[in-house]
Length: 453
Image (cartoon, rainbow, N blue to C red; front, top):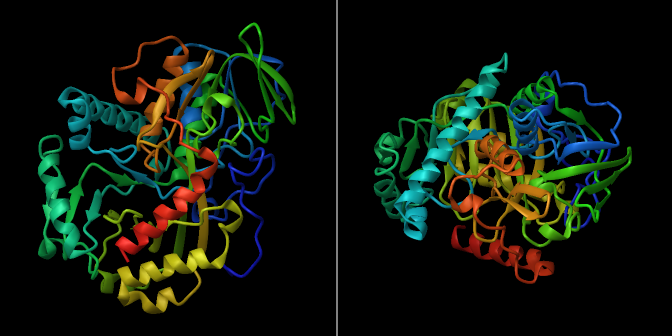
Protein backbone atom coordinates (compact mmCIF):
# COMPACT_ATOMS: atom_id res chain seq x y z
CA UNK A 1 0.00 0.00 0.00
CA UNK A 2 1.39 3.40 -0.96
CA UNK A 3 0.29 5.84 1.74
CA UNK A 4 0.94 8.78 -0.52
CA UNK A 5 -1.77 7.62 -2.91
CA UNK A 6 -4.83 9.84 -2.77
CA UNK A 7 -7.92 8.15 -1.33
CA UNK A 8 -11.47 9.48 -1.01
CA UNK A 9 -12.26 11.49 2.10
CA UNK A 10 -13.77 9.32 4.80
CA UNK A 11 -17.40 9.74 5.77
CA UNK A 12 -17.72 11.91 8.88
CA UNK A 13 -20.95 11.63 10.92
CA UNK A 14 -20.54 15.14 12.39
CA UNK A 15 -20.07 16.66 8.94
CA UNK A 16 -21.83 14.61 6.25
CA UNK A 17 -25.59 14.31 5.86
CA UNK A 18 -25.55 10.52 5.45
CA UNK A 19 -22.95 7.77 4.93
CA UNK A 20 -24.02 6.45 1.52
CA UNK A 21 -24.95 5.07 -0.85
CA UNK A 22 -22.21 3.30 -2.84
CA UNK A 23 -19.26 4.42 -0.77
CA UNK A 24 -16.37 1.98 -1.16
CA UNK A 25 -15.48 -0.44 1.59
CA UNK A 26 -12.38 0.20 3.66
CA UNK A 27 -9.15 -1.03 2.09
CA UNK A 28 -8.69 -3.40 4.98
CA UNK A 29 -6.95 -6.70 5.50
CA UNK A 30 -10.31 -8.27 6.30
CA UNK A 31 -11.91 -7.17 3.05
CA UNK A 32 -8.98 -8.35 0.95
CA UNK A 33 -8.45 -11.69 2.68
CA UNK A 34 -11.99 -12.91 3.36
CA UNK A 35 -14.21 -14.78 0.95
CA UNK A 36 -17.72 -13.82 2.03
CA UNK A 37 -20.96 -15.22 0.69
CA UNK A 38 -23.43 -12.55 1.73
CA UNK A 39 -27.22 -12.96 1.53
CA UNK A 40 -29.09 -11.25 -1.29
CA UNK A 41 -29.66 -7.60 -0.44
CA UNK A 42 -30.90 -5.99 -3.66
CA UNK A 43 -34.65 -6.46 -3.22
CA UNK A 44 -37.00 -3.56 -3.86
CA UNK A 45 -37.82 -1.35 -0.89
CA UNK A 46 -41.34 -2.16 0.38
CA UNK A 47 -43.74 0.69 1.07
CA UNK A 48 -44.43 -0.45 4.63
CA UNK A 49 -42.95 -2.65 7.34
CA UNK A 50 -43.73 -3.58 10.91
CA UNK A 51 -40.19 -2.72 11.99
CA UNK A 52 -37.33 -1.04 10.14
CA UNK A 53 -33.79 -1.42 11.40
CA UNK A 54 -31.33 1.29 10.34
CA UNK A 55 -27.84 -0.15 10.02
CA UNK A 56 -26.68 -3.63 8.96
CA UNK A 57 -23.81 -3.99 11.40
CA UNK A 58 -23.60 -6.34 14.37
CA UNK A 59 -26.32 -4.57 16.35
CA UNK A 60 -28.79 -4.20 13.51
CA UNK A 61 -28.30 -7.71 12.15
CA UNK A 62 -28.72 -9.29 15.58
CA UNK A 63 -31.84 -7.18 16.13
CA UNK A 64 -33.25 -8.32 12.79
CA UNK A 65 -32.45 -11.96 13.58
CA UNK A 66 -34.23 -11.72 16.94
CA UNK A 67 -37.27 -9.96 15.47
CA UNK A 68 -37.70 -12.34 12.56
CA UNK A 69 -36.87 -15.57 14.37
CA UNK A 70 -38.38 -15.11 17.80
CA UNK A 71 -41.22 -12.68 17.11
CA UNK A 72 -42.00 -13.45 13.42
CA UNK A 73 -42.00 -9.74 12.60
CA UNK A 74 -41.85 -8.29 9.11
CA UNK A 75 -38.47 -6.59 9.50
CA UNK A 76 -36.59 -4.55 6.92
CA UNK A 77 -32.93 -3.64 7.45
CA UNK A 78 -31.68 -0.51 5.68
CA UNK A 79 -27.93 -0.30 5.14
CA UNK A 80 -26.39 2.86 3.67
CA UNK A 81 -23.74 0.87 1.77
CA UNK A 82 -22.85 -2.83 1.76
CA UNK A 83 -23.83 -5.05 4.68
CA UNK A 84 -21.35 -4.65 7.51
CA UNK A 85 -19.74 -1.60 5.86
CA UNK A 86 -19.07 0.25 9.12
CA UNK A 87 -17.07 -0.89 12.13
CA UNK A 88 -18.48 -4.40 11.92
CA UNK A 89 -15.96 -5.00 9.12
CA UNK A 90 -13.26 -2.56 10.28
CA UNK A 91 -12.59 -3.58 13.89
CA UNK A 92 -9.61 -5.66 15.09
CA UNK A 93 -11.64 -8.75 15.97
CA UNK A 94 -11.18 -8.67 19.77
CA UNK A 95 -13.89 -10.78 21.45
CA UNK A 96 -13.71 -9.81 25.13
CA UNK A 97 -16.12 -9.65 28.12
CA UNK A 98 -16.49 -5.89 28.12
CA UNK A 99 -18.43 -2.95 26.87
CA UNK A 100 -17.63 0.64 27.51
CA UNK A 101 -14.83 1.51 29.92
CA UNK A 102 -16.09 0.36 33.33
CA UNK A 103 -14.95 -2.86 35.00
CA UNK A 104 -16.80 -4.97 37.56
CA UNK A 105 -15.27 -3.18 40.55
CA UNK A 106 -16.25 0.21 39.14
CA UNK A 107 -19.81 -1.01 38.59
CA UNK A 108 -19.96 -2.45 42.11
CA UNK A 109 -18.75 0.83 43.58
CA UNK A 110 -21.18 2.87 41.51
CA UNK A 111 -24.28 0.67 41.62
CA UNK A 112 -23.71 -2.21 44.04
CA UNK A 113 -22.70 -5.85 43.93
CA UNK A 114 -26.00 -7.07 42.47
CA UNK A 115 -25.58 -4.84 39.42
CA UNK A 116 -21.97 -5.94 38.90
CA UNK A 117 -23.06 -9.58 38.96
CA UNK A 118 -25.91 -8.82 36.59
CA UNK A 119 -23.51 -7.23 34.13
CA UNK A 120 -21.25 -10.26 34.40
CA UNK A 121 -24.25 -12.41 33.46
CA UNK A 122 -24.96 -10.20 30.43
CA UNK A 123 -21.37 -10.70 29.24
CA UNK A 124 -21.83 -14.45 29.55
CA UNK A 125 -25.01 -14.25 27.45
CA UNK A 126 -23.17 -12.16 24.85
CA UNK A 127 -20.49 -14.85 24.54
CA UNK A 128 -23.20 -17.51 24.20
CA UNK A 129 -24.73 -15.62 21.31
CA UNK A 130 -21.30 -15.13 19.76
CA UNK A 131 -20.76 -18.88 20.04
CA UNK A 132 -23.96 -19.41 18.04
CA UNK A 133 -22.58 -17.25 15.25
CA UNK A 134 -19.25 -19.10 15.39
CA UNK A 135 -21.04 -22.43 15.00
CA UNK A 136 -23.02 -21.07 12.03
CA UNK A 137 -19.82 -20.05 10.21
CA UNK A 138 -18.05 -22.79 8.19
CA UNK A 139 -14.68 -21.18 9.00
CA UNK A 140 -15.65 -20.81 12.69
CA UNK A 141 -14.85 -17.08 12.40
CA UNK A 142 -11.14 -18.00 12.10
CA UNK A 143 -11.09 -18.12 15.88
CA UNK A 144 -7.77 -17.68 17.72
CA UNK A 145 -8.53 -18.84 21.27
CA UNK A 146 -5.43 -17.83 23.25
CA UNK A 147 -7.02 -15.16 25.45
CA UNK A 148 -6.39 -11.47 26.05
CA UNK A 149 -3.35 -9.88 27.67
CA UNK A 150 -3.83 -6.48 29.31
CA UNK A 151 -0.25 -5.26 29.58
CA UNK A 152 1.23 -2.59 31.86
CA UNK A 153 3.10 -0.47 29.33
CA UNK A 154 5.31 1.15 31.98
CA UNK A 155 6.66 0.35 35.43
CA UNK A 156 4.38 3.05 36.86
CA UNK A 157 1.31 1.26 35.49
CA UNK A 158 2.01 -2.03 37.29
CA UNK A 159 0.54 -1.10 40.69
CA UNK A 160 -2.78 0.03 39.21
CA UNK A 161 -3.00 -3.12 37.10
CA UNK A 162 -2.25 -5.20 40.20
CA UNK A 163 -5.13 -3.47 42.00
CA UNK A 164 -7.43 -4.32 39.09
CA UNK A 165 -6.36 -7.94 39.35
CA UNK A 166 -7.22 -8.04 43.05
CA UNK A 167 -10.70 -6.69 42.28
CA UNK A 168 -11.19 -9.09 39.36
CA UNK A 169 -10.46 -12.18 41.45
CA UNK A 170 -13.91 -11.77 42.99
CA UNK A 171 -15.59 -11.98 39.56
CA UNK A 172 -13.22 -13.78 37.19
CA UNK A 173 -11.17 -16.29 39.21
CA UNK A 174 -9.60 -17.70 36.04
CA UNK A 175 -7.88 -14.40 35.28
CA UNK A 176 -4.11 -14.74 35.86
CA UNK A 177 -1.46 -12.29 37.01
CA UNK A 178 1.77 -12.36 34.99
CA UNK A 179 4.76 -10.56 36.45
CA UNK A 180 7.65 -9.44 34.25
CA UNK A 181 9.34 -12.83 34.25
CA UNK A 182 6.14 -14.76 33.55
CA UNK A 183 5.13 -12.31 30.83
CA UNK A 184 8.46 -12.76 29.05
CA UNK A 185 7.26 -16.22 28.03
CA UNK A 186 4.54 -14.53 25.95
CA UNK A 187 6.12 -11.35 24.62
CA UNK A 188 9.49 -9.60 24.41
CA UNK A 189 9.00 -5.84 24.63
CA UNK A 190 10.38 -2.93 26.69
CA UNK A 191 6.75 -1.87 27.14
CA UNK A 192 5.62 -5.13 28.78
CA UNK A 193 6.10 -4.89 32.58
CA UNK A 194 3.26 -7.10 33.82
CA UNK A 195 -0.09 -8.29 32.54
CA UNK A 196 -3.49 -9.72 33.27
CA UNK A 197 -4.43 -12.76 31.21
CA UNK A 198 -8.14 -13.25 30.44
CA UNK A 199 -8.32 -16.81 29.07
CA UNK A 200 -11.90 -16.74 27.73
CA UNK A 201 -11.29 -13.97 25.20
CA UNK A 202 -10.29 -14.72 21.63
CA UNK A 203 -9.54 -13.26 18.24
CA UNK A 204 -11.85 -13.58 15.25
CA UNK A 205 -12.42 -12.36 11.71
CA UNK A 206 -14.98 -9.52 11.98
CA UNK A 207 -16.18 -9.83 8.38
CA UNK A 208 -16.97 -13.51 8.87
CA UNK A 209 -18.92 -12.59 12.00
CA UNK A 210 -21.01 -10.00 10.15
CA UNK A 211 -21.63 -12.48 7.34
CA UNK A 212 -22.69 -15.20 9.78
CA UNK A 213 -25.30 -13.01 11.46
CA UNK A 214 -26.51 -11.58 8.13
CA UNK A 215 -27.10 -15.03 6.66
CA UNK A 216 -28.97 -16.17 9.76
CA UNK A 217 -31.14 -13.04 9.74
CA UNK A 218 -31.98 -13.45 6.05
CA UNK A 219 -32.77 -17.15 6.56
CA UNK A 220 -35.15 -16.20 9.37
CA UNK A 221 -37.04 -13.87 7.00
CA UNK A 222 -35.49 -10.46 7.51
CA UNK A 223 -35.22 -8.36 4.36
CA UNK A 224 -31.79 -6.76 3.98
CA UNK A 225 -31.51 -3.78 1.61
CA UNK A 226 -28.11 -2.35 0.74
CA UNK A 227 -27.16 1.15 -0.49
CA UNK A 228 -30.30 2.57 1.07
CA UNK A 229 -29.39 5.34 3.54
CA UNK A 230 -32.11 7.22 5.39
CA UNK A 231 -32.01 10.77 4.06
CA UNK A 232 -35.10 12.18 5.79
CA UNK A 233 -36.92 10.90 8.88
CA UNK A 234 -40.37 12.12 9.90
CA UNK A 235 -42.48 10.94 12.84
CA UNK A 236 -46.10 11.02 11.67
CA UNK A 237 -49.11 12.09 13.72
CA UNK A 238 -50.33 8.47 13.90
CA UNK A 239 -47.09 7.41 15.58
CA UNK A 240 -45.63 5.66 12.57
CA UNK A 241 -42.20 6.54 11.21
CA UNK A 242 -41.65 7.78 7.67
CA UNK A 243 -38.20 7.17 6.19
CA UNK A 244 -37.11 8.61 2.84
CA UNK A 245 -34.23 6.92 1.01
CA UNK A 246 -32.71 7.01 -2.51
CA UNK A 247 -34.80 3.90 -3.25
CA UNK A 248 -38.08 5.43 -2.11
CA UNK A 249 -40.14 5.89 1.02
CA UNK A 250 -40.97 3.31 3.67
CA UNK A 251 -43.39 3.71 6.58
CA UNK A 252 -42.83 1.60 9.68
CA UNK A 253 -44.71 1.03 12.89
CA UNK A 254 -41.38 1.07 14.76
CA UNK A 255 -37.76 1.91 13.98
CA UNK A 256 -34.58 0.55 15.55
CA UNK A 257 -31.62 2.87 15.09
CA UNK A 258 -28.51 0.66 15.00
CA UNK A 259 -25.90 2.78 13.22
CA UNK A 260 -23.87 3.55 16.38
CA UNK A 261 -20.72 5.56 15.51
CA UNK A 262 -21.91 6.07 11.92
CA UNK A 263 -25.14 7.83 12.91
CA UNK A 264 -25.37 11.20 11.10
CA UNK A 265 -25.37 14.13 13.50
CA UNK A 266 -28.92 15.29 12.69
CA UNK A 267 -30.57 12.01 11.66
CA UNK A 268 -33.14 12.26 14.45
CA UNK A 269 -33.42 14.94 17.16
CA UNK A 270 -33.94 12.38 19.93
CA UNK A 271 -30.31 11.20 19.70
CA UNK A 272 -28.62 14.40 18.58
CA UNK A 273 -25.57 15.31 20.67
CA UNK A 274 -25.60 12.08 22.70
CA UNK A 275 -22.58 10.36 21.17
CA UNK A 276 -19.05 11.29 20.17
CA UNK A 277 -17.88 9.47 17.02
CA UNK A 278 -14.18 8.69 17.44
CA UNK A 279 -11.84 7.20 14.85
CA UNK A 280 -9.89 4.08 15.63
CA UNK A 281 -7.16 3.29 13.09
CA UNK A 282 -5.55 -0.03 12.26
CA UNK A 283 -2.53 -1.08 10.26
CA UNK A 284 -1.53 -4.56 9.15
CA UNK A 285 2.05 -5.39 8.19
CA UNK A 286 3.43 -7.84 5.70
CA UNK A 287 3.86 -11.37 7.12
CA UNK A 288 6.63 -11.44 9.70
CA UNK A 289 9.64 -13.59 9.00
CA UNK A 290 10.52 -16.47 11.31
CA UNK A 291 13.38 -14.39 12.70
CA UNK A 292 11.07 -11.43 13.38
CA UNK A 293 8.52 -13.60 15.17
CA UNK A 294 11.25 -15.17 17.26
CA UNK A 295 12.67 -11.75 18.14
CA UNK A 296 9.38 -10.44 19.56
CA UNK A 297 8.59 -13.71 21.32
CA UNK A 298 4.90 -13.26 20.59
CA UNK A 299 2.64 -16.21 19.80
CA UNK A 300 -0.20 -15.93 17.32
CA UNK A 301 -2.91 -16.82 19.83
CA UNK A 302 -3.14 -13.76 22.09
CA UNK A 303 -4.90 -10.42 21.89
CA UNK A 304 -2.97 -7.55 23.51
CA UNK A 305 -4.00 -4.12 24.75
CA UNK A 306 -1.96 -1.76 26.91
CA UNK A 307 -2.85 0.46 29.88
CA UNK A 308 -2.55 3.89 28.23
CA UNK A 309 -5.50 6.27 28.28
CA UNK A 310 -5.29 6.18 24.46
CA UNK A 311 -4.66 2.49 24.16
CA UNK A 312 -2.68 0.58 21.57
CA UNK A 313 -3.81 -2.93 20.71
CA UNK A 314 -2.31 -5.68 18.58
CA UNK A 315 -2.48 -9.33 17.55
CA UNK A 316 -0.79 -11.70 15.12
CA UNK A 317 -3.12 -12.80 12.33
CA UNK A 318 -3.40 -16.39 11.08
CA UNK A 319 -1.07 -15.71 8.12
CA UNK A 320 1.68 -14.23 10.33
CA UNK A 321 0.96 -10.54 9.78
CA UNK A 322 0.93 -8.16 12.73
CA UNK A 323 -2.20 -6.04 13.29
CA UNK A 324 -1.61 -2.87 15.34
CA UNK A 325 -4.20 -0.23 16.17
CA UNK A 326 -4.97 2.87 18.21
CA UNK A 327 -6.72 6.22 18.05
CA UNK A 328 -6.48 8.04 14.71
CA UNK A 329 -7.48 11.41 13.31
CA UNK A 330 -10.22 13.53 14.86
CA UNK A 331 -11.95 14.50 11.60
CA UNK A 332 -12.98 12.13 8.85
CA UNK A 333 -11.31 14.21 6.14
CA UNK A 334 -7.95 13.63 7.84
CA UNK A 335 -8.33 9.88 8.44
CA UNK A 336 -6.31 8.76 5.41
CA UNK A 337 -3.42 11.18 5.81
CA UNK A 338 -0.05 9.36 5.97
CA UNK A 339 0.73 10.99 9.31
CA UNK A 340 -1.66 8.70 11.17
CA UNK A 341 -0.23 5.50 9.73
CA UNK A 342 3.25 6.83 10.49
CA UNK A 343 2.15 7.53 14.07
CA UNK A 344 1.03 3.91 14.50
CA UNK A 345 4.26 2.62 12.92
CA UNK A 346 6.27 4.71 15.39
CA UNK A 347 4.23 3.29 18.28
CA UNK A 348 4.79 -0.21 16.91
CA UNK A 349 8.55 0.46 16.76
CA UNK A 350 8.54 1.55 20.41
CA UNK A 351 6.60 -1.55 21.37
CA UNK A 352 8.93 -3.84 19.42
CA UNK A 353 12.31 -2.19 18.72
CA UNK A 354 13.30 -5.55 17.20
CA UNK A 355 11.05 -4.68 14.24
CA UNK A 356 12.76 -1.43 13.17
CA UNK A 357 13.22 -2.73 9.62
CA UNK A 358 9.56 -3.70 9.38
CA UNK A 359 8.48 -0.32 10.76
CA UNK A 360 10.49 1.50 8.12
CA UNK A 361 8.22 -0.03 5.47
CA UNK A 362 4.76 1.16 4.54
CA UNK A 363 2.10 -1.09 6.08
CA UNK A 364 0.36 -3.50 3.75
CA UNK A 365 -3.02 -2.16 4.94
CA UNK A 366 -4.20 0.90 6.84
CA UNK A 367 -7.81 1.87 7.55
CA UNK A 368 -10.05 3.56 10.12
CA UNK A 369 -13.54 3.19 11.55
CA UNK A 370 -15.87 5.22 13.76
CA UNK A 371 -16.66 4.06 17.28
CA UNK A 372 -19.35 5.70 19.40
CA UNK A 373 -18.20 7.05 22.76
CA UNK A 374 -20.75 7.79 25.46
CA UNK A 375 -20.26 10.72 27.82
CA UNK A 376 -20.28 8.44 30.88
CA UNK A 377 -18.36 5.53 29.31
CA UNK A 378 -21.03 2.88 28.80
CA UNK A 379 -23.69 2.11 26.17
CA UNK A 380 -27.46 2.34 26.34
CA UNK A 381 -30.30 0.28 24.94
CA UNK A 382 -33.42 2.43 25.27
CA UNK A 383 -36.30 4.20 23.56
CA UNK A 384 -35.36 7.84 22.87
CA UNK A 385 -38.82 8.68 21.45
CA UNK A 386 -42.15 6.88 20.95
CA UNK A 387 -41.81 3.89 18.59
CA UNK A 388 -38.05 4.52 18.21
CA UNK A 389 -35.44 2.30 19.84
CA UNK A 390 -31.67 2.36 19.80
CA UNK A 391 -28.51 0.72 21.07
CA UNK A 392 -25.31 2.77 20.84
CA UNK A 393 -22.29 4.09 22.72
CA UNK A 394 -20.12 0.96 22.94
CA UNK A 395 -16.90 3.00 23.35
CA UNK A 396 -14.98 0.72 20.98
CA UNK A 397 -15.65 -2.45 23.00
CA UNK A 398 -18.66 -3.80 21.15
CA UNK A 399 -17.60 -6.90 19.23
CA UNK A 400 -18.99 -9.27 21.86
CA UNK A 401 -21.67 -7.16 23.54
CA UNK A 402 -23.34 -6.05 20.30
CA UNK A 403 -24.41 -9.65 19.70
CA UNK A 404 -26.58 -9.43 22.82
CA UNK A 405 -27.37 -5.71 22.55
CA UNK A 406 -29.02 -6.27 19.15
CA UNK A 407 -31.25 -8.93 20.66
CA UNK A 408 -32.00 -6.74 23.68
CA UNK A 409 -33.05 -3.72 21.63
CA UNK A 410 -35.34 -6.00 19.60
CA UNK A 411 -36.87 -7.31 22.82
CA UNK A 412 -37.38 -3.75 24.03
CA UNK A 413 -39.12 -2.86 20.76
CA UNK A 414 -41.46 -5.81 21.28
CA UNK A 415 -42.44 -4.61 24.76
CA UNK A 416 -40.27 -6.98 26.79
CA UNK A 417 -38.95 -5.98 30.22
CA UNK A 418 -35.15 -5.84 30.12
CA UNK A 419 -32.92 -6.66 33.10
CA UNK A 420 -32.62 -3.94 35.74
CA UNK A 421 -29.14 -2.86 34.73
CA UNK A 422 -27.73 0.59 33.89
CA UNK A 423 -27.44 -0.26 30.18
CA UNK A 424 -31.23 -0.52 29.98
CA UNK A 425 -32.54 2.08 32.46
CA UNK A 426 -31.62 5.52 31.16
CA UNK A 427 -30.97 7.41 27.93
CA UNK A 428 -27.53 8.26 26.65
CA UNK A 429 -26.57 11.51 28.37
CA UNK A 430 -26.25 14.51 26.10
CA UNK A 431 -22.82 16.05 25.72
CA UNK A 432 -22.70 19.60 27.12
CA UNK A 433 -22.16 22.03 24.25
CA UNK A 434 -22.26 19.21 21.68
CA UNK A 435 -21.01 21.52 18.94
CA UNK A 436 -17.69 21.60 20.85
CA UNK A 437 -17.31 17.82 21.20
CA UNK A 438 -14.27 17.71 18.97
CA UNK A 439 -12.57 20.58 20.76
CA UNK A 440 -12.88 18.57 23.97
CA UNK A 441 -11.67 15.44 22.19
CA UNK A 442 -8.58 17.26 20.89
CA UNK A 443 -7.77 18.57 24.38
CA UNK A 444 -8.15 15.11 25.88
CA UNK A 445 -5.85 13.60 23.23
CA UNK A 446 -3.17 16.19 23.99
CA UNK A 447 -3.38 15.48 27.71
CA UNK A 448 -3.36 11.69 27.28
CA UNK A 449 -0.35 11.73 24.95
CA UNK A 450 1.54 14.01 27.32
CA UNK A 451 0.76 11.68 30.23
CA UNK A 452 1.86 8.51 28.44
CA UNK A 453 4.52 9.62 25.96
